[in-house]
Length: 443
Image (cartoon, rainbow, N blue to C red; front, side, top):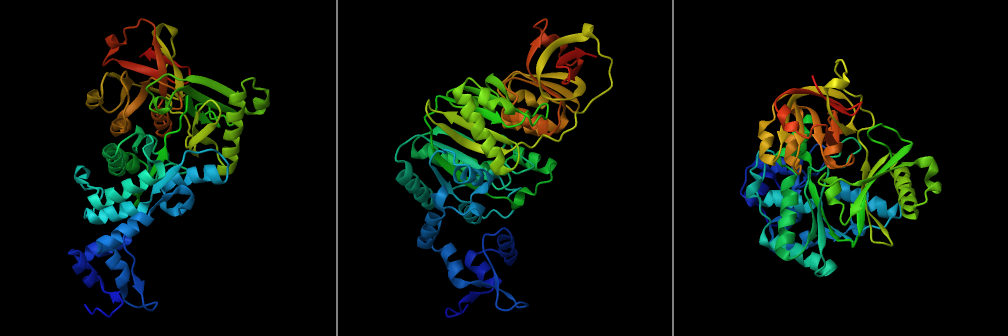
């Protein structure tokens, strides 16, 4: 290895990192390092200066520091899709967003190299660490921008919020985070969630090569909202582009997207927005329509209101407006109706009833079941989604689990009302979920 030579061979780079040459090829493929050819058909070389920056502590510090910037100063290719959309929300749609600091994808790629993660799909992510030198830089940057204000720490993966797939609820986000220890933990959990079992299952079903994806982190000032919610610029249940649906609640909107709380719901006719008596809804609807125009498709928008200003936290395409309802042949009889529910995903399906009272009960779900969820849903339910024929849930029609039901085209009802209030007596019995009529029936 000649010190005066500005280039290094693959073997020389491998020796510097104490790994095999095949590892260097993999790192290059994943974008961790970049090779050059001295002529079009020549051998691959690596620029010595670029490689030394990766292994020198002081240069590490400088490099990582440069990869943590306010969203306005970031390259859209390095911030993940969610943060990229947030930037568009502000720049092109002129909406108010919280102050946002981005830890870009280059930091995550460097962390993969530092943790010697060659196979992210097979890696035991509980072992993943953010080295102290990086934590110090990250926390210093956050302190400079936000002082000790409460924060939101959000994942921004390169594969989520795409035109075709939402990855709704699959990646971690944390609200009202305070203190260095909690901030570091939230960032680590966001990184770990990229290759979680749930995300891997969602990706596999949808044909996404997750090993080629990366993760940025959006750190935001917690907006002091008093009301928050979600607005869809098209009715996702009836696939009606002429209607908008708003769901909202007091306080932060996380209870709506998680499906943990029944929201207030409003349906709005796009042609009659100017006739709305509620000034706030009129303003929110116009912002939503503008976002639909900017992104060129019906939008799923998360928002908050502080009593004076409307913040926009996220906007992504509605991914379920082209689904055809799944149905089965059966003879409808009023005498067999057990209860009713609000339609989340249209269709008809039957199966043996499983009742989920806590997340440990997910293991009871078998292929072809109808699943009634009585507890707070977490994203580990995605593991069982391929087995489920129909879902009965609680919460609104715009929650993450509702979006997942529509993406996987699973007939689904929410807020069930059971006529005899004793649904458990039908446990393990075959029932029908008619999510076209909004009925639950015995077969």
